[in-house]
Length: 216
Image (tube, rainbow, N blue to C red; front, side):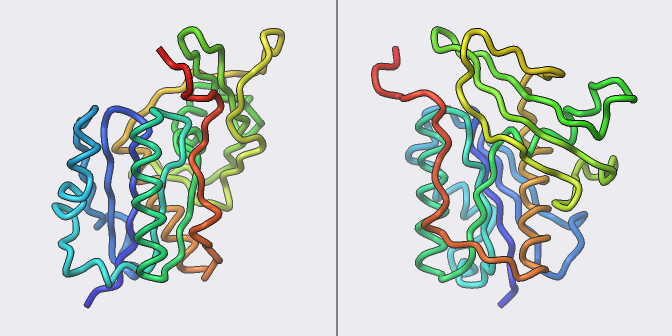
């Protein structure tokens, strides 16, 4: 039985899954992106099985999941599945924000002189305001596979709802690229597996900067 590292990302309308052998290079990863929308509720386990058959699930050695911010239902379902698998398989689980995962590629939009310095990622939510997190990406960007090692990537402030008067700068607009972002998630998971970092499943929770209660 192989030793698998598995990443799940559903903070947008597209479900992203990526897996690789724990000892294999990231270039050999299997990445699957499925536009799902509301179908995610019923289809998540079957799509996961497309990437990794149920018979291979006991070989999962570490999991990672994008915790949002993102769609309430999609993010919650994937986090619940990841927590359940990690608990049942007794393997570590890493929860990382979707903004952190996109930070390495978005920072290329900054002027060259500002790269390597802290910047914000901002998302405008209709009728709910703006959500922002703060990030720093050092010299670790890999253009070939669009990833960045954890030692070169920092989340200085988790995504939160901004006050109307707050104007973070420099600021970049949130832009999901599920294929790139789930590969980044897998890279960070693989790094943590190699360093034997702890990963308690019960500490991984979805990020909800605004309450879904009362959403229109």
